[in-house]
Image (cartoon, rainbow, N blue to C red):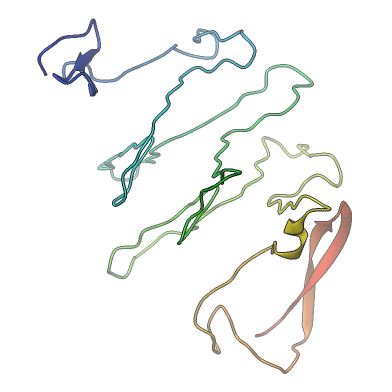
Length: 215
């Protein structure tokens, strides 16, 4: 680390690596919603970074954040995105938008490709407590009267563009695992007793999927 950039960062000798000065404890842009970094130009970005990789092995990360949690009883979040709507009739809004795009001319994976991947890595031991989800889709209410428009309150949306070849190959869900009694998947011909239903929306119309009292 030879050359020193002003204030916060240090540049490596080859000019390819920019690192936070060890003397700085954190890097902050803006202080709150009332004192933000202002972006008033249409189609502008607060932080913009473009990367390219020709690596043929290993894993390349466009952005990598590691958080080591050591505080017992605390909540640790490696990354958090929040979009607060402070005015009416904004066209579209997303707390976080993740995309995997296959180029029109070339590009595919030979293994797993996801638009958004959430995984809980479990150490090789029996975990004593807690509830765990690989992905959690949540509609959170700030009060007892909070409600979305009727017909649009889908917590998990599986959408396929109509009149395309995707109609023939897209699936709502994919389940995999060992098949047998007591397991998540149990191939069984005897019909159980219907115990209730789960409301879903299919092409904008409310439908109900039945579930059984036993496997």
